[in-house]
Image (cartoon, helix red, strand yellow):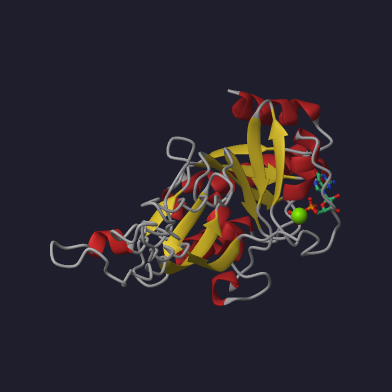
Length: 282
Ligand SMILES: Nc1nc2c(ncn2[C@@H]2O[C@H](COP(=O)(O)OP(=O)(O)O)[C@@H](O)[C@H]2O)c(=O)[nH]1
Ligand SMILES: [Mg+2]
């Protein structure tokens, strides 16, 4: 299963107690600091650091403070929770009048924090569009991905990734009218296109109203994140093998009103696929 959100509780180690001990001759305190401290003023060992491995692209949000950081290649290591400070041993409590104090500190609790983890896939390109627009078929055609495709909606229930020429392409499923209100798969997967450099907005020639279908998807993007429709995008008019050239031209013309580049394409037409590969390959 594809998990892209999780909540975790992290707790730093306990500091460990300081030691109450005395030198053999009973001439003075010898308990070292935690944790836990040893005799002969030995300071206890520090606990081993615990590292949690997370994929690059994971955002870590402190649920209490809303403070957030995102793991990227440049800053791969963060301290989530500090371990507790060790307690002072009885040596620390020696005074000129009391050489043999019998008290030591217990050591402190480690820090405890709750985090929400959100994974946004790091993809260069994102395929979006209504169900059945041909997104998964294109991903399969361009890359070694082997995603199930079929002529009914919601064959793809999770985002899929493929690699072409070292570039990662994400197939983001399930956008329909009302997705932002939770219909269908909802818009939970849209976080995965927030970081792509270029969006391919797929519309099938089978659409009865390509302008309306285009707007439907853009509106859902907008409800999720008002900046998303501002992202660089290209319209892919898909499955052009199903209609004749004149009809394709007409539909391309209809789509030019959105001031986007429109690329007519079919998985059965290598010339059009090569044009798409050129865009991805650079
Ligand atoms: N004729 C034709 N059918 C296609 C083309 N691309 C996809 N399809 C078919 O359209 C249906 C939906 O495709 P799919 O990739 O699952 O769409 P998705 O829901 O957007 O991922 C499948 O039956 C595909 O075989 C194409 O270029 N030409
Ligand atoms: Mg699909």
